[in-house]
Amino acid sequence: MPQHQLRDKIAYVQQKAWLFSGTIAENLRYGNPDASDERLEHALEIAQASDFVHALPDGLQSYAAQGGTNFSGGQKQRLSIARALVKTPELYIFDDSFSALDFKTDAALRKALENETKDAAVLVIAQRVSTIRNAQQIIVLHEGRMAGIGTHDELMKTCSVYREIVNSQTKEADES
Image (cartoon, rainbow, N blue to C red):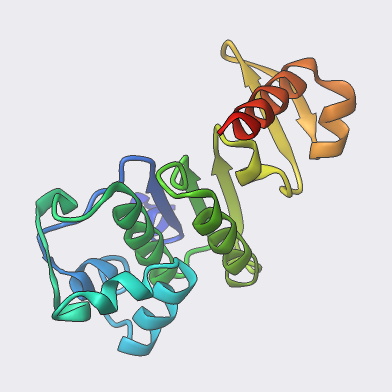
């Protein structure tokens, strides 16, 4: 398979989200130039970005600076997720791309993504347990090696590294 065909089947959303200079609509259509305005609006809704985009004076026609420097980290992540959704690939790769989101937005986004990505493969790389807790399969890495594989419940019983991560994040949440 030629590389460009493979790339057409994948949407990759990285932790350090990147926007191109141009309008929000142009950024969202990057992977699907023929996407309708309705498709853009739907992707913004799923990505929890609709409210802040429509609060901008020009909405979808608002300008994004190179790199998205005129948006917060969470806004850039949500716009990057919306761009991936507009593409409708066979494989979504979310590389710690929920890390700049508050817990409420993260939860709402993950819930909305469930139905939207049901016909695709989804790979989520995350440090926040709440982001991957309901995954069909979790692979725990420790010092470059696989320390465990299974569901959340299975890993809580069988993987001490996973339990330590969960316990440390639960403790942090209780303290804040």
